[in-house]
Structure formats: C-alpha cells, structure tokens
Length: 314
Ligand code: NAI
Image (tube, rainbow, N blue to C red):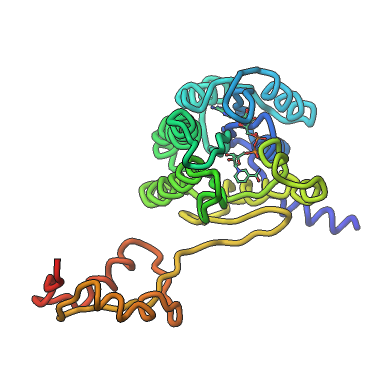
C-alpha cells in the first residue's frame, strides 16, 4: 500500500507555479476545474459574475465560496466578479495578484433556449456575447502574455448542442460551434509558442442541465468527472493541440471530421442532374477520409485539377 501511494504521488500531475483563470468558476463545471487545479498547486483566478442561468443578476457569493474552498484545502486563489465580456479585467486580476497567466479555461455560460420561431434578437445576442465574445476577450487578453513566456494552455467549452444541434438552441449551438472554430485557428497560431488550445464538450449535472435531466442521471454526471480531462490538457506534459473531446460520467473520447470519398466531375460538364445521378457516391462513407487540416482538405479537392476545370454549368 505504501509503495502504491508513493508511486501515485510521484506521478501526480502538479501545477505549482502556474496561474490559472477559470471563468464561470462559481458553480458546476468551472468550480470543479478550479478546485482540482487549486488542489494541485495552481494559483487560481476564480471568475464568476454570479448571475442566474439566463444571464440575469450578479453576485460575488459564488466566486467567494469557491475561493474559500480552495484556500481551506491549502491552495491559493483570488475571486474575480467581472463578466467575461470584460475579459481584460479578469486577465489583469491574474497579473495583479499572481504576476502571470498560464492557463485559461473558458467555461462561463448561460442559456436562452427558445425555438427559432420565438427566438428574440436579445436571446441570440446575449448568448453570443457571453460564450463567444467572452471567450474571445479573455483569451485575447491572455494571448500576448502566453506567447511572450512561451507557455500557455487554453480550453474552450463547447457542447453537443453545437456539434450536433439541438431543438430550441439555435443561439447556443451557434455560439458553441463558434468556439470550436476559434480554437482550431488559435491552435495553429499558438503552436510555435507552446500555446496549445483544445476544446471540450462536457456532459455534467449542474444548474444548467438539472432542468432537463432526471436526478439519477445527474448523480452519474458529476462535474468532477469532467475536470480531470481539462486539467490534463492544461498540464505542461500534454502536447495535445487543436483537438475536440466529448467527456462526461467518466467517458473520454476525441472527435474528428470524416469525409466521404466523394465524386469529382473533373473534366466534364455537370449540373444538378449529374449531382443527382451520383448522389449515392457523394454521400457514401465507405472508404471515407479524415482531413486533419485545411491543407489535407484542399488537396483532394484540387488534385488533378487541370485546364478543364470550370466547365460546370452555372
Ligand atoms: P453553471 O450554470 O453551473 O455554471 C456556469 C457559471 O458561469 C455560473 O456560475 C455563472 O454565474 C457563470 N457565468 C455566466 N455568465 C457569466 C459571465 N458573463 N461572466 C462570468 N461568469 C458567468 O453551468 P455548467 O453546466 O457548469 O456550465 C459550464 C459550461 O459548460 C458552460 O459554458 C456550458 O454551456 C457548458 N456545457 C455544460 C454542459 C452540461 O451538461 N452541464 C453541457 C455542455 C456544455
């Protein structure tokens, strides 16, 4: 037993000397991320606006509570009550209190669910501002510091609703898919400076999900089951970059794009009729390919393109 625990301690992933910002850390998933990083030696900026799940109100209680929990466990943390829309102030809090920023977990989120026919412009805009603009503002303010120090780990929090779509969540799906696009490009831009960016699509019982999930399911979906993946991706030993993971209830998996082999009408005239005629080939996933980057995607589209290109009917 003694040996077991000794080897466990030797292998423990630590974050000593690292400064982590976790947005929306007053509840649910953000709280779990913050507690785990705090317990492993990171100095944590516990950011939370303290509003309700629809983006209304404001309170310092949620962030204060998590800061108190981290400190009670022997860790180091400071509260930030700013909205992620004022992301520069959150990063400034990290610099003022701890002198640097190494990790950003963009996690703050709200819901404004409504079928598209009833969705207001405010429902659309507020979801964009908190999820997309908020993640942009925090990340953009942290970015130069990470580049200059040659170290950074950034997490975006997406959702199955973004990846697959979900009734009543057109605004949320838009925002969550937007974060994946942002992460994909930041992963490319940050790689040379050891600033790595990954995205998680969690499933967890929280005040956001308790409205739609039965109690026994919530028990199996503790936010604590999502935090280890986020923490691993934020560790200096992880070189994972530009990836997307589904995680929840202990399940961990990576996603990628799949493309059918497709049909090239190269060198021949084609219109909707030819597309219709070859439809089964266009949508057949036998012999599918998995483009990993824009180069691999473009290559098979333009390969063999010659002077006959452009004969398609308008
Ligand atoms: P939660 O409601 O328990 O926590 C979200 C936190 O974000 C709250 O404490 C809230 O005060 C804070 N927040 C909201 N707006 C903010 C703002 N403008 N600035 C700073 N903080 C703000 O919800 P949960 O479930 O922990 O969600 C965390 C993230 O995970 C969200 O981005 C959510 O969309 C995402 N997510 C959650 C899933 C789940 O199954 N719980 C599924 C997929 C995605």
